[in-house]
Length: 296
Image (cartoon, rainbow, N blue to C red; front, side):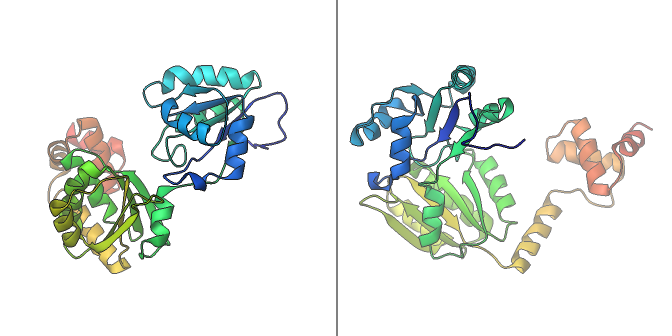
């Protein structure tokens, strides 16, 4: 399917418009003009976005579009677009769909052939990366880690197998738990950077080791929007980490096929069906072969 963004007649268009992550002067001329020209603005928080609209004297009406009303709102939005309306979607700060609502609406538009037009603009992750002092390329963007400790550790264990610089978003209220988890998984000497209040008056970059950041966030209460960057590793470190992760998450090779299925069910909390798939993949067998073996 080909999309020619500006050559489609008779249909509306969805514009994805980034908004400033702090400093209002980061709003582009094109973004301001787009918000003025469209028929409707979909906003994550209409009260928050109204302050931005007031600043730039934009009078376009708004409708709420957030994680709690996405499924209800999408059919309405698609109907408006098919009637020929032009609509802009914004999040509270930064680029729509990146750790913010938007992805499901884009999918719905693509499915019915409505043009989706992205505007370039503010993004906290890239802004933090280029000034972090860490190797900027390649990088791996993850976003927000899970909140629960066990799931957070598991996610970091997976990230530890990447050689790229890793970009995370985090709430200031979870910095203690998150840096503690990073230290546990990556080790005390892992290079990390905490970036907070980007583009604002109190913008700050705190560079150090995992152990140093753990000590800092336990001594000092830091506020504001935060990005965490975990420094890249050389390929040998990644190979070692990956081998360790595989060893921890696979059964002993001396176990029978049936015993390995039981191992996956017990240690990874899988159903028998999923455990059979896991053993088949682990041993390079067909699922039917594993199934026959345990039901022999």
